[in-house]
Length: 587
Image (tube, rainbow, N blue to C red; front, side, top):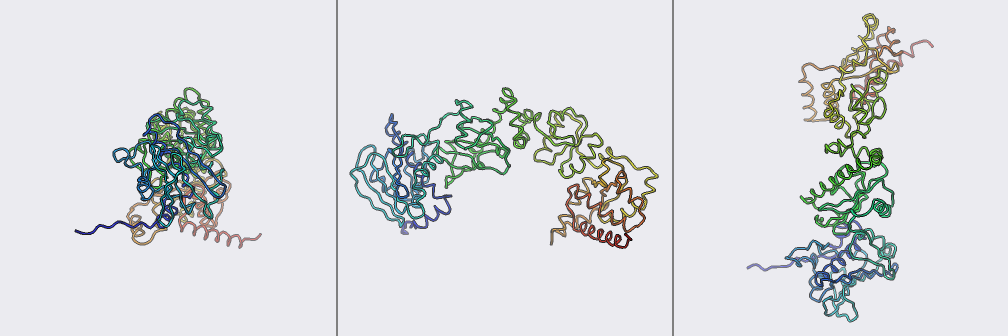
């Protein structure tokens, strides 16, 4: 039979884990004290049905000392040895069939150690509420502790901390009040600073019964900003309010919330709980049933968390649906500020799409138009590139045709859905669609420009592009680059090959060489342009060749196409040719 040994815990190393890896900052010591205090009061309420006098009082000697007192269940001598001296043991774990009851906050039994981050000693005065001897327990960061009887001690527990160098800022009444409101604003137990009758935490438990004006006032006090609207959240997993910001925000903003677990602040980050489109909201939420991670700063991914996300989305959707019926003007203001967030919502939810599409704005060649306006415009085209839209916009404006830009997040999916559901004559812009906004050159004009076209095709041949003569507006645009889907794919492959090496580069090269007939892009030269007209009259081949390369690169840049290395080098060579030609000309 082999002999059994116990693990030896290095408390100094444990404190390093707490301060540098588990907890984000020392101020969580107050969160852990609040958690323990509330759980002690909850335990006393269980043991003494009808008792409802629980409270927490904090006495602060500025910069020096803090006494954190609760009038909860307290600890017996056996409980002290069992729970204060054993790391990882929780006084709550064996209360109900070996499991933590739903109304207990704590789980890991190591929270008290966080006090060593601000104090070199932890002194605990405690007396069991059910009667018995009081004790004083003194813990030191070297892993030792003392335990002595205590005569003068009220029922409950007091944790006494002495500020260590560098931690004095946490031992100020203003800082303590700030942290209590931050971490424990939603706690059901009243919390006071000693000598001050004003409760630090006092909010409603059910926001569904609170008026809109009261909700907005509470949100302004909590987040220190004004909101457009307040959405009460009351679902099986969540209680609270989702506030609609009065300004547009970036999709990457996921912080600034107050999300609580069993009335104790868990996180300000909404990444885990909230859907991706919720960046236009600031949320004050509490949950009693989701599981926390070990650091108690996020939620554990499981089916319950997924259900909570879906409940939140449904609550917001139902509120906005009712708003469209009761206050459409408020809904329009909301959409005007948060169109991008609502577009992201409308993609995956057909009811939201039907609700919002008439209000959502889209950029077009005729300015911003709503979905309602697009339903009645007749024929139109859409293009999924913002630079290409800007390049083509003046052409469509001059021709009196409508072009829609779908290069922004969510727009292409929404325009496609709008076209499909309403059977609108709106289609993606392809190369052959451009012919509808261009006029062919006459036979005589083609003959006059023969030299220009010949030199242009020689210059553009290595880029799989051909020059064509057209007339289009505006006249200030000398050339326009257009390519088919096949050409676009090949350009992407070539660009990838330019920045790749080794096996991957060889594979791309093989792919390109396997294309039997390379499709050609088109560079349309605008006969309405004074520049092109002058090139038609020019008779110096080298100049025409160089100008074709310059116009080609200019058109690529205007259309938002990335340049390949050879194209940029060709333009530099072309500019040198033009400079040499200009230098040889008399002034």
